[in-house]
Length: 294
Image (cartoon, rainbow, N blue to C red; front, top):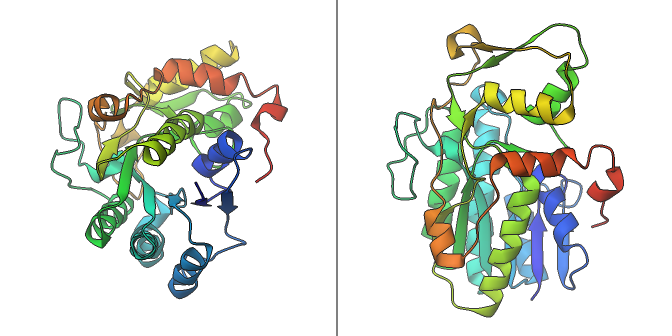
Protein backbone atom coordinates (compact mmCIF):
# COMPACT_ATOMS: atom_id res chain seq x y z
CA UNK A 1 0.00 0.00 0.00
CA UNK A 2 1.49 3.34 -1.07
CA UNK A 3 1.02 6.18 1.43
CA UNK A 4 1.54 9.92 1.02
CA UNK A 5 1.77 11.81 4.33
CA UNK A 6 1.58 15.60 4.54
CA UNK A 7 2.84 17.54 7.56
CA UNK A 8 5.88 15.46 8.47
CA UNK A 9 7.37 18.26 10.61
CA UNK A 10 4.30 18.78 12.81
CA UNK A 11 3.41 17.01 16.02
CA UNK A 12 1.27 14.26 14.52
CA UNK A 13 3.35 14.04 11.36
CA UNK A 14 6.55 13.53 13.34
CA UNK A 15 4.87 10.82 15.40
CA UNK A 16 3.62 9.11 12.23
CA UNK A 17 7.16 9.23 10.92
CA UNK A 18 8.43 7.37 13.98
CA UNK A 19 5.65 4.80 13.67
CA UNK A 20 5.80 4.19 9.92
CA UNK A 21 9.24 5.22 8.65
CA UNK A 22 10.29 1.58 8.29
CA UNK A 23 7.28 0.69 6.14
CA UNK A 24 7.74 0.31 2.43
CA UNK A 25 5.87 2.70 0.16
CA UNK A 26 5.46 5.59 2.62
CA UNK A 27 6.42 9.11 1.51
CA UNK A 28 6.50 11.98 4.02
CA UNK A 29 6.23 15.57 2.81
CA UNK A 30 6.82 18.78 4.75
CA UNK A 31 6.69 22.51 4.12
CA UNK A 32 9.92 22.40 2.15
CA UNK A 33 8.42 19.81 -0.19
CA UNK A 34 4.94 21.21 -0.86
CA UNK A 35 3.47 24.65 -0.17
CA UNK A 36 -0.12 24.00 0.86
CA UNK A 37 -1.07 27.50 -0.26
CA UNK A 38 -0.17 26.50 -3.82
CA UNK A 39 -3.29 24.44 -4.47
CA UNK A 40 -2.54 23.65 -8.11
CA UNK A 41 0.87 22.23 -7.27
CA UNK A 42 -0.63 20.29 -4.36
CA UNK A 43 -3.18 18.69 -6.67
CA UNK A 44 -0.55 17.81 -9.27
CA UNK A 45 1.77 16.28 -6.66
CA UNK A 46 -0.92 13.94 -5.32
CA UNK A 47 -1.97 12.80 -8.78
CA UNK A 48 1.67 12.39 -9.81
CA UNK A 49 2.54 10.22 -6.79
CA UNK A 50 -0.76 8.31 -7.13
CA UNK A 51 -0.85 6.83 -3.61
CA UNK A 52 -3.43 4.40 -2.29
CA UNK A 53 -3.88 6.54 0.83
CA UNK A 54 -3.24 10.20 1.64
CA UNK A 55 -2.79 11.26 5.28
CA UNK A 56 -3.17 14.96 5.99
CA UNK A 57 -1.31 15.73 9.22
CA UNK A 58 -0.69 19.34 8.16
CA UNK A 59 -2.75 22.16 9.66
CA UNK A 60 -2.75 25.77 10.77
CA UNK A 61 -2.95 25.27 14.56
CA UNK A 62 -2.09 28.70 16.00
CA UNK A 63 -5.51 29.21 17.59
CA UNK A 64 -5.01 32.80 18.75
CA UNK A 65 -3.09 33.97 15.69
CA UNK A 66 -5.83 32.63 13.44
CA UNK A 67 -8.07 35.43 14.68
CA UNK A 68 -5.84 37.89 12.80
CA UNK A 69 -4.97 35.54 9.90
CA UNK A 70 -8.33 34.03 8.94
CA UNK A 71 -7.58 33.82 5.22
CA UNK A 72 -4.33 31.91 5.73
CA UNK A 73 -5.95 29.61 8.29
CA UNK A 74 -8.79 28.91 5.85
CA UNK A 75 -6.40 28.12 3.00
CA UNK A 76 -4.43 25.58 5.07
CA UNK A 77 -7.31 24.11 7.06
CA UNK A 78 -10.10 24.12 4.47
CA UNK A 79 -8.87 24.71 0.91
CA UNK A 80 -5.88 22.35 1.07
CA UNK A 81 -7.91 19.45 2.52
CA UNK A 82 -10.53 20.01 -0.19
CA UNK A 83 -7.87 19.67 -2.88
CA UNK A 84 -6.42 16.60 -1.17
CA UNK A 85 -9.85 14.97 -1.02
CA UNK A 86 -10.70 15.84 -4.63
CA UNK A 87 -7.33 14.58 -5.85
CA UNK A 88 -7.60 11.39 -3.81
CA UNK A 89 -11.06 10.77 -5.24
CA UNK A 90 -9.70 11.31 -8.74
CA UNK A 91 -7.14 8.52 -8.32
CA UNK A 92 -9.42 6.28 -6.18
CA UNK A 93 -7.29 6.79 -3.08
CA UNK A 94 -8.39 7.10 0.54
CA UNK A 95 -7.83 10.17 2.70
CA UNK A 96 -7.27 10.33 6.46
CA UNK A 97 -7.75 13.92 7.62
CA UNK A 98 -7.34 15.23 11.18
CA UNK A 99 -9.78 17.66 12.74
CA UNK A 100 -10.39 19.02 16.22
CA UNK A 101 -12.64 19.18 19.26
CA UNK A 102 -12.79 22.94 18.62
CA UNK A 103 -15.55 22.39 16.04
CA UNK A 104 -17.87 22.33 19.09
CA UNK A 105 -18.95 25.32 21.15
CA UNK A 106 -18.19 23.72 24.52
CA UNK A 107 -21.64 24.19 26.03
CA UNK A 108 -22.36 20.45 26.41
CA UNK A 109 -22.49 18.67 29.74
CA UNK A 110 -21.52 15.24 28.41
CA UNK A 111 -19.03 13.79 25.93
CA UNK A 112 -19.49 14.90 22.34
CA UNK A 113 -20.35 12.17 19.84
CA UNK A 114 -19.76 12.52 16.13
CA UNK A 115 -23.36 13.50 15.39
CA UNK A 116 -23.50 16.39 17.87
CA UNK A 117 -24.15 19.82 16.43
CA UNK A 118 -20.97 21.62 15.41
CA UNK A 119 -20.79 25.27 16.36
CA UNK A 120 -17.19 26.54 16.60
CA UNK A 121 -16.53 29.67 18.63
CA UNK A 122 -13.26 30.79 17.01
CA UNK A 123 -11.65 31.18 13.59
CA UNK A 124 -9.50 28.08 14.00
CA UNK A 125 -12.52 25.91 14.76
CA UNK A 126 -14.51 27.39 11.87
CA UNK A 127 -11.71 26.73 9.38
CA UNK A 128 -11.29 23.16 10.62
CA UNK A 129 -15.03 22.58 10.29
CA UNK A 130 -14.91 23.99 6.76
CA UNK A 131 -12.15 21.47 6.03
CA UNK A 132 -14.31 18.61 7.31
CA UNK A 133 -17.21 19.69 5.14
CA UNK A 134 -15.02 20.07 2.06
CA UNK A 135 -13.60 16.57 2.50
CA UNK A 136 -17.10 15.12 2.88
CA UNK A 137 -18.34 16.87 -0.26
CA UNK A 138 -15.41 15.63 -2.34
CA UNK A 139 -16.22 11.93 -2.27
CA UNK A 140 -16.77 8.76 -0.27
CA UNK A 141 -13.27 7.48 0.51
CA UNK A 142 -12.28 9.38 3.63
CA UNK A 143 -11.85 9.07 7.39
CA UNK A 144 -12.00 12.33 9.34
CA UNK A 145 -10.33 11.97 12.72
CA UNK A 146 -11.29 14.51 15.38
CA UNK A 147 -8.85 14.69 18.26
CA UNK A 148 -8.18 17.04 21.17
CA UNK A 149 -5.55 18.93 23.16
CA UNK A 150 -2.69 17.47 21.11
CA UNK A 151 0.83 17.60 22.54
CA UNK A 152 4.28 16.14 21.89
CA UNK A 153 7.88 16.81 22.81
CA UNK A 154 8.22 18.65 19.50
CA UNK A 155 6.58 21.92 18.53
CA UNK A 156 4.60 24.59 20.30
CA UNK A 157 2.11 23.03 22.70
CA UNK A 158 0.92 23.05 26.30
CA UNK A 159 3.34 20.37 27.47
CA UNK A 160 6.41 22.20 26.24
CA UNK A 161 5.12 25.51 27.57
CA UNK A 162 4.74 24.03 31.06
CA UNK A 163 8.19 22.40 30.92
CA UNK A 164 9.70 25.75 29.88
CA UNK A 165 7.85 27.86 32.45
CA UNK A 166 8.66 25.37 35.19
CA UNK A 167 12.31 26.43 34.93
CA UNK A 168 11.36 29.86 36.30
CA UNK A 169 10.75 30.74 39.94
CA UNK A 170 7.25 32.18 39.48
CA UNK A 171 4.22 29.95 40.15
CA UNK A 172 2.29 28.66 37.15
CA UNK A 173 -1.19 30.20 36.87
CA UNK A 174 -3.26 27.79 34.78
CA UNK A 175 -6.89 27.86 33.64
CA UNK A 176 -9.06 25.44 35.61
CA UNK A 177 -12.52 25.92 34.02
CA UNK A 178 -11.93 24.40 30.58
CA UNK A 179 -12.22 20.61 30.34
CA UNK A 180 -10.91 18.27 27.69
CA UNK A 181 -8.79 15.19 27.05
CA UNK A 182 -5.05 15.74 26.54
CA UNK A 183 -3.96 13.47 23.70
CA UNK A 184 -0.38 12.65 22.80
CA UNK A 185 0.72 12.70 19.18
CA UNK A 186 2.25 9.26 19.70
CA UNK A 187 -1.11 7.83 20.76
CA UNK A 188 -2.78 9.38 17.71
CA UNK A 189 -0.08 7.95 15.45
CA UNK A 190 -0.54 4.46 16.84
CA UNK A 191 -4.30 4.76 16.40
CA UNK A 192 -3.76 5.96 12.84
CA UNK A 193 -1.60 2.96 12.03
CA UNK A 194 -4.54 0.82 13.09
CA UNK A 195 -6.79 2.76 10.73
CA UNK A 196 -4.32 2.37 7.86
CA UNK A 197 -4.19 -1.37 8.36
CA UNK A 198 -7.99 -1.60 8.41
CA UNK A 199 -8.33 0.45 5.23
CA UNK A 200 -5.74 -1.78 3.58
CA UNK A 201 -7.25 -5.09 4.66
CA UNK A 202 -11.02 -4.62 4.89
CA UNK A 203 -13.91 -2.47 3.67
CA UNK A 204 -14.21 0.74 5.69
CA UNK A 205 -17.18 3.07 5.99
CA UNK A 206 -16.30 6.69 5.32
CA UNK A 207 -17.14 9.10 8.10
CA UNK A 208 -16.10 11.14 11.09
CA UNK A 209 -14.49 9.39 14.05
CA UNK A 210 -13.34 10.75 17.40
CA UNK A 211 -9.86 9.70 18.52
CA UNK A 212 -8.66 11.10 21.83
CA UNK A 213 -7.10 9.71 24.98
CA UNK A 214 -9.38 8.44 27.71
CA UNK A 215 -10.47 10.42 30.73
CA UNK A 216 -10.75 14.17 31.10
CA UNK A 217 -9.18 17.02 33.03
CA UNK A 218 -8.63 20.78 32.98
CA UNK A 219 -5.54 22.64 31.83
CA UNK A 220 -4.74 23.09 35.53
CA UNK A 221 -5.07 19.35 36.11
CA UNK A 222 -2.93 18.62 33.06
CA UNK A 223 -0.23 21.01 34.28
CA UNK A 224 -0.27 19.47 37.75
CA UNK A 225 0.22 16.00 36.28
CA UNK A 226 3.11 17.20 34.08
CA UNK A 227 4.81 18.66 37.13
CA UNK A 228 4.19 15.53 39.21
CA UNK A 229 5.33 13.01 36.61
CA UNK A 230 8.41 15.04 35.77
CA UNK A 231 9.32 15.27 39.46
CA UNK A 232 9.31 19.08 39.58
CA UNK A 233 8.54 19.20 43.28
CA UNK A 234 9.38 22.87 43.77
CA UNK A 235 7.02 24.12 41.06
CA UNK A 236 3.75 25.62 42.27
CA UNK A 237 0.65 25.43 40.07
CA UNK A 238 -2.24 27.77 40.84
CA UNK A 239 -5.75 27.51 39.36
CA UNK A 240 -7.29 30.52 37.61
CA UNK A 241 -10.41 31.13 35.54
CA UNK A 242 -10.69 31.79 31.82
CA UNK A 243 -11.59 35.38 32.69
CA UNK A 244 -8.27 35.71 34.50
CA UNK A 245 -6.38 34.80 31.31
CA UNK A 246 -8.05 36.49 28.32
CA UNK A 247 -6.92 35.37 24.85
CA UNK A 248 -7.75 36.62 21.33
CA UNK A 249 -9.64 33.39 20.57
CA UNK A 250 -12.46 32.04 22.69
CA UNK A 251 -12.03 28.42 23.80
CA UNK A 252 -14.74 25.80 24.37
CA UNK A 253 -15.34 25.33 28.10
CA UNK A 254 -15.99 21.61 27.60
CA UNK A 255 -14.75 19.58 24.64
CA UNK A 256 -14.42 15.97 25.79
CA UNK A 257 -14.94 13.55 22.89
CA UNK A 258 -16.61 10.14 23.01
CA UNK A 259 -14.45 7.49 21.35
CA UNK A 260 -17.15 4.81 21.37
CA UNK A 261 -17.68 4.85 17.59
CA UNK A 262 -13.95 4.39 16.90
CA UNK A 263 -13.76 1.50 19.35
CA UNK A 264 -16.88 -0.21 18.06
CA UNK A 265 -16.05 0.21 14.37
CA UNK A 266 -12.30 -0.40 14.33
CA UNK A 267 -11.47 -1.85 17.74
CA UNK A 268 -9.07 1.05 18.30
CA UNK A 269 -8.75 2.55 21.76
CA UNK A 270 -6.22 5.14 22.91
CA UNK A 271 -4.78 4.98 26.44
CA UNK A 272 -5.92 7.13 29.35
CA UNK A 273 -4.43 10.61 29.11
CA UNK A 274 -2.28 10.09 32.22
CA UNK A 275 -0.79 6.90 30.78
CA UNK A 276 -0.03 8.64 27.48
CA UNK A 277 1.60 11.55 29.33
CA UNK A 278 3.86 9.20 31.29
CA UNK A 279 4.88 7.52 28.04
CA UNK A 280 5.66 10.86 26.39
CA UNK A 281 7.64 12.25 29.34
CA UNK A 282 9.65 9.03 29.55
CA UNK A 283 11.21 10.10 26.25
CA UNK A 284 12.54 13.42 27.59
CA UNK A 285 15.79 11.84 28.77
CA UNK A 286 15.99 9.42 25.82
CA UNK A 287 15.87 11.65 22.72
CA UNK A 288 16.86 8.73 20.49
CA UNK A 289 13.33 7.37 21.00
CA UNK A 290 11.85 10.46 19.40
CA UNK A 291 14.03 10.54 16.31
CA UNK A 292 13.35 9.02 12.92
CA UNK A 293 14.32 9.69 9.35
CA UNK A 294 11.48 10.23 6.93
